[in-house]
Length: 284
Ligand SMILES: [Zn+2]
Image (cartoon, rainbow, N blue to C red; front, top):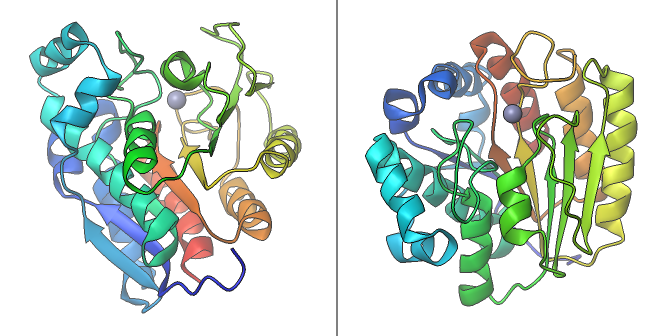
């Protein structure tokens, strides 16, 4: 796609409801991270477009999740924010795949990678990335996708829905906990020790990106959880510095058509630093 002229370096998708009505463990980091982007001047750059998220169409959700699943999400009280989160990812995916931005970063109020066809857990309700893929396949005619999930929890919901699909590469970082071993043709697990440090993680990133390079795809999703930080709640013991290094590695190999999807993480200080650093890499 050399020579593809994009107007913006980055599309940033956001909605204030993510911090007002998001899942409690996830929502307190959202507004501080967005404020951090403002404080760094990143939202004023003419290379950055900021879009307000709109809810995903319910008919798309019905294609990916069973009626009983959807009813359970409605009963949970998080259906609206989950729909808005899925809409954010859908907009970001469209912008990076066929819109005016080289790459995108999508805020959410509920995560997606533990939402399977017929079940959900772990602050996830609707599988935002699977919904975006279904839409892009229909509307933009992109068939093949790569997903690199660096949230340290196993993305069992994503594996359930897209694992058997030969046209999607699913690379999943995790520490082994709660892992399903059903492997499809294009599934790669990067299993790291629970206390993996930056060096172990970045070696895994090199392996993941090599797999993405070898897989012809129209859009790369990064499922971005900063719960991998030593001060946050998930596995791995990553430092403040690692997320910028990660984003630069991705950008070096894939300068465009990358959609970052916010995932796990609760610590507002970590979110400011991690999201701020990633957006800074993408914004220039
Ligand atoms: Zn996680």
